[in-house]
Image 1 (cartoon, rainbow, N blue to C red):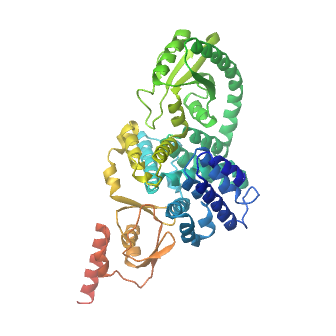
Image 2 (cartoon, rainbow, N blue to C red):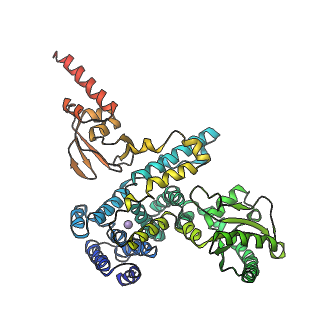
Image 3 (spheres, protein in one colour):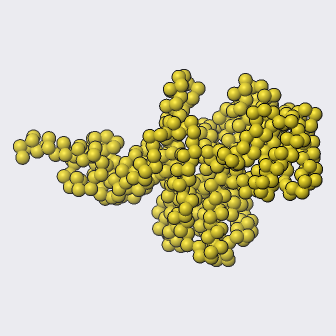
Amino acid sequence: MTIDKLLEKTNDYCTPTDQKAIKLAYEFAQNIHKHETRGTGGPYIQHPLKVAYYLAENELDPSTIIGALLHDTEETNPKISSEISKIFGSEVADLVEGVTKLGKIKIKKSWFLPFKFLRSRQEKQLGFQRHLESLRKMLLAMSKDIRVILIKFADRLHNMQTLEGVRPDKQRRIAQETLEIYAPIAHRLGMGKLKGTLEDLSFPYVYPKEYEMTKQLAGKSYQEKEKVCNKAQEIISKVLIENHINSHIDGRKKHLYSLWKKLTQHNNDINKIYDIIAVRIVVDSIEECYKVLGLIHKTWRPLIGRIKDYIAVPKPNGYQSLHTTIFGPDGEILEIQIRTNQMHYNAEYGIAAHWHYAQKNKSAGNVHKGSHLNDKLTWLDELAKWQEAQTDENELLNGLNLDFFKDRIFVFTPQGDIHDLPANSSPVDFAYSIHTEVGNKCIGAKVNGKIVKLDYSLNNGDIVDIITKSQSKPKRDWLRFVKTQRARSKIKSFITKNSLILGK
Ligand code: MN
């Protein structure tokens, strides 16, 4: 990857001024990383360049591209953030800071729920709920700007593609984190392509035996199915031309990891899985989708109970398509998916597609202010929509509504523990939420690595490190700014007890 190749890509949709800024960001990052190399060998700058390129392929806005180029600079030089802000503006600086912060959130072991070991239904539900809650908290902690997550995803994608350059014990941990945290989030955001890619990259590291087995099973099956698929495609294409329907038809192979998941539900019998390869038909309009479905059913007999209308009733993550399974040419069973261009794009890119569109529409109105955070399609609205659409999960999460979340912040310990506090809580509230003794002996705090005052107002996603001193005592003055009932009562009771002892 070279800067020229990146600039060639961004040139399609960026102004000359943007292009200059992107080049400047490259030089800036290059200078900071000049003494570093990647685990796979080669200069470090290749990594941010690759990350920026992925995002440019999705035509993400210039600030995101610049943020991607700079995303690891703070990691190398923690003092660089004010300089980034001066040169590239606060929008970029915030993105870089967000990505850096996200990198510091350690995914807790307890977040990985070994479902295998959970026996009862109740245990499973509880495990599931905890897992979802962790995901949700992580999402909310990152909710300031969706682009932070998009950069983080591109970063993770490249790290997974170059995982062979990492120590073996780390490989597995990173792959597991990708499989159990990043892929589900991508799924929730409707980013089907990314989800499938991340899962398949992780699969051999996390479940090596199962990966080999699936690969072998699929290998044979793919070959047989591909022939059937090609034959069906030819016939469909002819029928659609006769009916004057403009279409794009191709075969999509099921991702290996999702094939394995499905195999486990069917006793590893690959003959029970009908969508190893599916024929995908992309047309211009919704009317045509239904028309094509009719033509398919006229040509081949459908399997009962396998016609799914995800256009009228989209999946919880927004996925839309018509699915049907038919007895195809020579009686072979085959799945067919029908959708519009727009649905196809959304299914591949999910929230990134929405975001991209929103941004485009804005620049059509020619002022680019970066005020996308106030767009109707905000991050939280999206979350709310999913939440409404969740069915089985919803039962479990009924108690959590978004209003509750709006007045809460999620703050992290340096070890990655999440603490849920009321908005505008102070480091003292946080200290007491860890342990009474931590609160009582608290003398100061670092937020995201910087020393702050004890009455500092914490923000969503902050990483807070409490400084304690063994002889220190709570101050009455703290009652002025603490927000939690817990901190208030602990401080009061300490003061009362001590004034009794001292006879005051
Ligand atoms: Mn990185």
